[in-house]
Length: 623
Image (cartoon, rainbow, N blue to C red; front, side):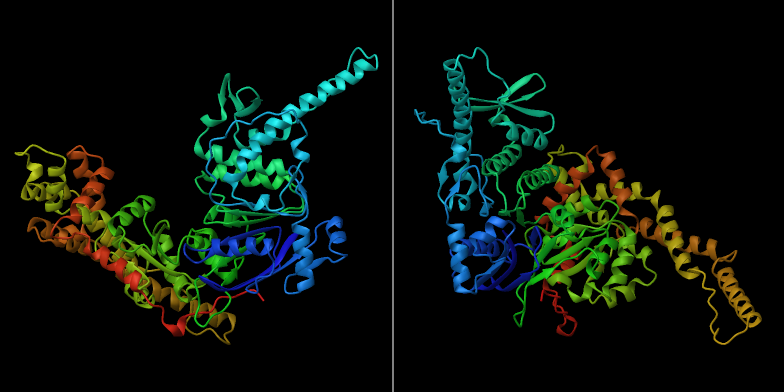
């Protein structure tokens, strides 16, 4: 059985979610609060009682046995009362614990490893895999099923031994003196899956006396409870899955990445998909890795509620315009799962910058999700993509970008780029993010917090400022060189040899037109890079920065490269830069002068940003 269509209406917080042509893997993505889990819950409830008029589904048979039980029908739609009753009877028929055929298997997000109560042995050693279970057993939370899994495995081992004993006795009664030892291992599939999940570890036994699952690492034997919480979780899931041996089933999985390292999450999903036959998997996830890896299947992004109401389900494909733009920005399409307002953080150390920006923003703007986005090249791509895609709030998400002041070197006309972005692209008014960490008063508070001696110069703002200025002096030439190089690059620009008029020319006229353009470009470059232009620009910029530093104007803290200055200061006072930043941010929150006000204002603008209605593009939806 496979879900091929679903239609959800007015299931708060969802308004309309419709999707068709679903494949064997369906990934449901979207930001927090949009209603992903509610959509999955509504589907599960409908499978158990397909009468809710707010939910309609269409399922397709994946085996001949299903078609026979469905009266020869290939598909069932729950808008038809008779077909809905056929589906209900089919799903509520008797099933075996170890042979789930054509059902629904639910793995909710509550998958904690529970303490297993000892199994009370009796004289009944029937194969537990052949026992009938309630039709809705596989809909129950995983934590309520896992004790049954362990007890079933214990009983399986015991029933296997009883079977061997019965066979031996029968052979003895028949006069045999030996028996073949190709007896099989009832836990073999569990052992194989355990090794695939946790390379280097092997499941060795299920001890009946202690009722403890044991595994081996090297020469050491350990209990299952010694695994990490993430490892225990994937073992819990896979053992439950293997016990059911599902075929032709719909497997619903809420947040498979929860608590898991991405590699462990990947091994879990691969093990599940390899274990059964003709199963369909529906993943509700925030994982960019899972989303990106599933683009050859069905990826459904649930967008925020629209006005006027329209389908919130948007198909995400690898080759659409939005995905192409994200790739150019250094992002996988899975980033759409993170939030409704994404702020791309530019910077060579963007992951660290994200932590710093996040600490500065604090809890003031929880709707903003900060995403590292690489170096200056990303900034130019973002500026170019704004006009074509990003300003349309693709997939219901608003996009922004924040960069250090030095990123202006990546765009020839930063003012024009920021104006065209209508507030989506912002550059810090200081050269580096680290320039905001040079306030002497906040630094003095940091060292007071660190309990520097009362007579230490590190408690005196004036002395700290003098020291930073001394440390910054060698970087005047560096700062001047950066600015002059950028100015000359903008002046000289790229060579443009395209003739101004080239229509209807013969070859000689075309060659002459190119010659004119060559001479014009040569003259322009000679003027921009003349013998005097470069040294004059260097002297001018060096003098300006040097004067700002020697006269102690506040502008030197804005314009000189702050990153090497802060790093040099941290080395001098023997403190790790990351620690200094963390304490600085903490002390700045309590200081009367907020050194990060510029940044807080930018985040506030992003949070209050309203997309002009004339530019709000409706998302493409399933038909």
